[in-house]
Length: 231
Image (cartoon, rainbow, N blue to C red):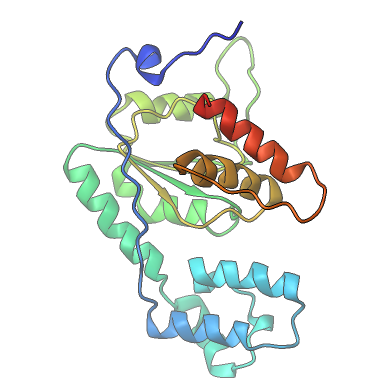
C-alpha cells in the first residue's frame, strides 16, 4: 500500500500554483563574439566544444582563452559581461523588494559561478550550497549544508541561495523561495533523463511513443509517467 502526501499536507498551507517562464536574453556584443568564436573553432572536439559553449552561454569569462582564435577577444575575455547575470540582477532586485526570496540553480557549473554570484549579490545576504559544503553531522549538530538551508528558510536577512542541482535536488525543503531560476539546462545524462520525465512527459496531455529499436529507456520513462499521472 502506498502512502501519498501532498505538498499542502507537508507545509500545512495551500501551495500557490507554479508558473513557468522561459526568459530569452539577448547577448551583449562581446558575449556573442566569444560564443561565436568558440563555435567556429574546428580544432576542438565535439564533446569539448559543447562543454565550452555551455560555459560561454552562461558567462563568457568562464571560457579558457586557449579555445579562442581571436587575440583581441582573448584580451577582453575576463571583462566581458554575462547577459544572464544582468537579467538576474533585475530578477533578484524585483523579487526581494516584494519580500520574496530567490533560489538559483546551476546544473553543471560550480567553479567560477556559485562563489562569484554569491559575492555579486552579497547585499541580499546570499549563501551557497555546492559540493564543497560539508554534509556530515558532528556532535549531534546539523551539517553545514543543513545550517545554510535553515538560514535561507527562516532568516529574513538571507534572501538569495545559490546551489548546484547535484547537491540540492528533490527531497530538500526550500519552500521559502518565491522564485527559482535555472541558469542553464541539464547536461549530464541523469539530469536530462529526469528532465524528460518531469518536465516533458509529466506535463503532456497526450504522448505518442514510436519505438524503432528494443530498449528499456523509453519504456521506463513512459511507465513512470503513467504511474505518476494515475492512468
